[in-house]
Structures are given as structure tokens and as C-alpha cells.
Length: 370
Image 1 (tube, one colour):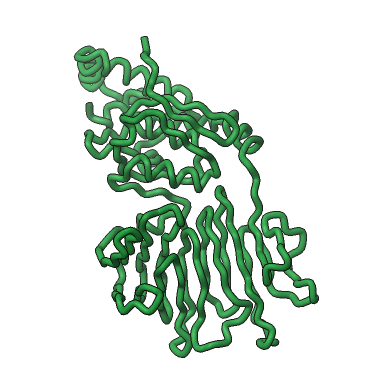
Image 2: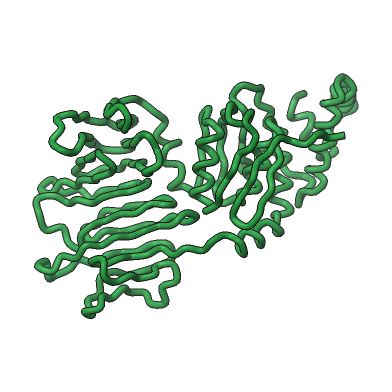
């Protein structure tokens, strides 16, 4: 069925010929009728009954199963429902039930500062030194005049949050959910070195005399000034460095002579089990989409999607529907949507049931429908 006919019909703009074609399509198969009723209901529940196709194309999350034919109007309609009614019930439930954890700045393993609920716009040490300024969802570290007192600093970002860090020399780091970054209060040596656990996007201030080095798992990523993403969650079997701009050198720690150079569009992947480091070309825009509040999928396994959603929404997803593990998805999702909205989109072509209790989601085989 041509999606434009559906748009016209729902907006009362279809011609008699187009209406006849639509009804013929509905009559051919009971599944077509069932799908039409679902879409018609979705359209009726939306905030506006005259939404232009161009607007839908711009705003909707376009999810599809890679092994099936993509039908944009299906996803457009369901998204209108999700945006229109807002799913206020789930939002209030999630706000009340999800475990709230703070973003924490730890200094010299002695003092902790809660950055999530900071009541002051500056961070001061126990000695009275102002080390940083805090704004919404970000912290800006100040250059320290007394370089003899270099402090060890560690920022921990829990699941369900992301955070922006501006280092004292001007480099910017975006930490993804469930990540941490360790760095000194001043970079006084021949290099600027930090240690990452989890995932971070780095926009490095150029300094040819003081290279920037990111330590992540067993990898060292060495740069002068560039933009790149490092994905190094402890539970993952691999560590990835994806280069968006500039040049980086990726090598192994512990005196290994294995190293590769990346140019924009290339990814270095280190496999922990085989101790292997390889280079490949990947979609860097998809890898860094989380920094723009998006999830871009390209034949992405459902297991990987659920793992990402767990970190982003600070929930636990238990999948008791084995058949779903074999599915892959492609498309784009705005992470500003609630997790229930995203699950509703995923289940369009692969039906499944899910229940939500506190911060745990259980996915099961779909129950038979009459």
C-alpha cells in the first residue's frame, strides 16, 4: 500500500479512486485489516489529525527490521500516538521508581562532590581552592596556578545520565552513561593523560608540544588535537576508537609495539580475548549519535540495543523471548523518548510483550490475540 494514500485518507484528502485502492488492500488479507485498524486508532489518538507527511518524516523515529520491507507509515502513525498522548503514566512511574544516582567528582580519593544536585556554582576543595565551575549537566575545570599541588580527580557518571566535562586546558569530554574519567587537576608533564572507563567522546584542544593520551582498558589513544569516540565498557569483549576528525594513533599498553594510525572515518577495534587490534571503516555518525541524543541502528542486534537502553535509562532488561535475540534493527530513535515509547516501536514488526516493575523490564513471548 502506498503510504501517501494512507496520509491522504487519514487527513480526509484521498480521492474516490485512492479510497477504493485502500479498501481493496484491506479486503485482501485479514492482517491488512488488522493493521489498518491499528493505524487508524493511532491517528485518531494523535494531537493533530492533519499532520503533513513531510513533518512526520522529519520528526518520527524510523525503525525497521532489516530482513523485512520497511513501511514508513506504520512507524509514523505509532510515533504520533506516543508523542501525542505523552505516556504520562510511564513517565511518572519511571521518575518515581528508577534508582537515582548522583554524578560524583572525587578528589584525591578523599573528598566527594555531588555534581547532580550541586547547590553552588563552584567546586571548592577542603583547603579552600576553587577547582571548577558547575552548570547544568556540565563542569568546567579552572587552570590551577599552583602546579606543585596536582590533585587526582575522578568523575563518575551513573547509568541513566550523560555529562560534559571541560578540562582545564580546554579539551571537552562527553561521558556516556555508566562511565568514568580520571585526570589530574593540571597537566604538568610532557603529555596530557586521562583514563576512561565506559564511553566518552573527546574534542581535544590542540597542543603539539603536549600530546593527549587516553588510556582505556589495554589501549592507548594518542592525539594532538582531534575529535574521536572511545567505547570501553568493562563488560564488553572489545574496545573501539572511532575517529571523526584529525588523526590518532592507537596502540596497546605494557610495552607492546602493536599500533595503528587512524584517519577520519576509521575505527580501531581491540578484541580482549584474542588480544588483536584491527582497523576498519564504519559509520562514525552512528557511533557518536549518543552525543546528539540519538540512537542510530544499522542491522543492530536486539541484544546490543537492550544493553544500550539499560545504560541510558538506568534499567534492567530481562529478555525471556529467545526468538527476539535473532532480530536486528535499522533506523533512528531520539533518546529523549521514554523507554516504553522505544519498546513500542521495536515491537511493531516483531511482536513481544513487556512488563515494567520499578526499574526492571521483562520481555516475554507475545500472548495470542483474538
